[in-house]
Image 1 (cartoon, rainbow, N blue to C red):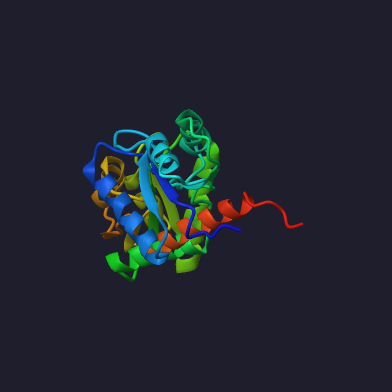
Image 2 (tube, rainbow, N blue to C red):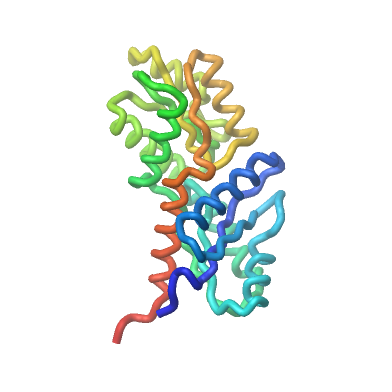
Length: 245
């Protein structure tokens, strides 16, 4: 059996025109590599930023690797996870096997721990929490975000409300107002984002305009996120191994 340390790991981010997003992805690459010394970890992007997944896969094949593991840096299994990532692998034209891991959702112990720690850095004493997310028209993806908000609120012992930057309601301000209607007065905003950018800025500005008192940073290179990436990579790699005789 080949070691997980030998098989390179390619992280696939959505990509953004905002340079902060690529910096966040590079921070996560460093965190994953630090968590597993000796592992070759590389970043790739579906749009806006280079290199593309196909370029990284081609380079790894040319370097003599005989398989690759790929982890999509996505918090829901919406269109990018279902369509764009598999298409990026198909269009790469490489002959080596590529094990594509599951996305980072649904909510799990590591994701929840990362959200809570980021929120604790932002402040304390919250009696309500908004989980700020990018937004999507995909109902299943919205359900995933709602589950994450419920789990975060339950773990904190406070009411929680989802807010979206686009494509779905409620806005950040509407989420804060809904929590105020339930009696919350000190409302914090947790960030269901991997990186900063326009959508993150939009939803948190809306929440702050309605009286939210603190905003957590996106997950970026959080150690919990790095551990989750490795968990997904290991599961994908093991699924590719032949069954024992």
